Amino acid sequence: MVITGANGHLGQRMLQTWRDSFDLVALVRSEGAMAQLTNATGQGVTVAVVDYADADTLRPFLDQADCLVHLSGIIKQSARNTFTQAHEDTARAVAAAAAGSGLQGIIYLSILGAELHSDNDCLLSKARAEAILMAAEPPCTVLQVPMVLGEGDFASLALSRKAARRWCFEFNAESYEQPVYAGDLVVVVQAHIEQGCHRQRQQLAGPEALTRRALIQRAAAVLGNSPHVISLPVSLGYFIAAIFEMISSAPPVTRAMLGVLNHDDHLDVPDDQTDLTDLDTMLRRVISP
Image (cartoon, rainbow, N blue to C red):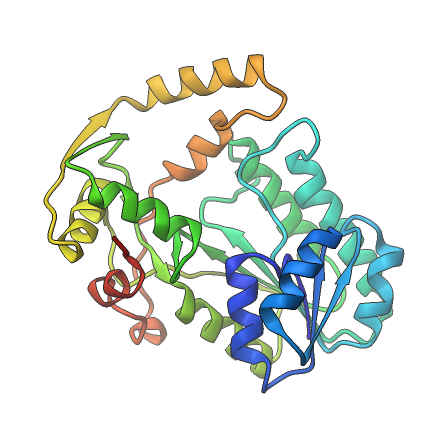
């Protein structure tokens, strides 16, 4: 089993969960990430540095694996790391490296809202990467996911900070979120691995959709808090982001990033996903003071 982007919170969770079930190879992009991940996982996981956009460096690892879980991706691009480089170029390299290898399947984690007709640069790039991998051999299963909440991850920490405030200012607080628990996502990915990958795209979301205002208030209830959530026009956010993009090669926020974060996630939950962790249990696990 090979995992790209394995040093992220979700990748590390997969490594810890699967270490007794699979022979794991974790691929990262830097020596620093390799050292950090090696310390975090200990023995039993092979960690290697590769260039995700270089098929020749990927091929030796895919030749010896049954499945690749491709987690690499970004929601904020910079001059040094564009969406094309992070998504499409890596997808082409994976497809080229997988061709003729012993790999039996690919699982690609994408984002809800990724469509080839999207006017959002990030979502469009993700959709193009999906198309590249869906056309590749072996078959690829694409999982489109919304906000993922797990213990200690960035999304949960950001939500915890908002929940702890007395006053919380939020762009477009009426936008819908449908968070899924990280532990559930790992279980779903493992099920696809064990059942065998098929050429398909599946949307996975949590059991409850609610406005971002309501999500912050539900998270705040875990802390015994009741913040005032003030909604700001998202157009103001786009204006601020545009200024950052003009004055910085690595802006702290971009218009594409805001577009992803403000995408309305509101899906019907299929019958085979009704055993997902409910929202209140999820929040009790991930929200911290």
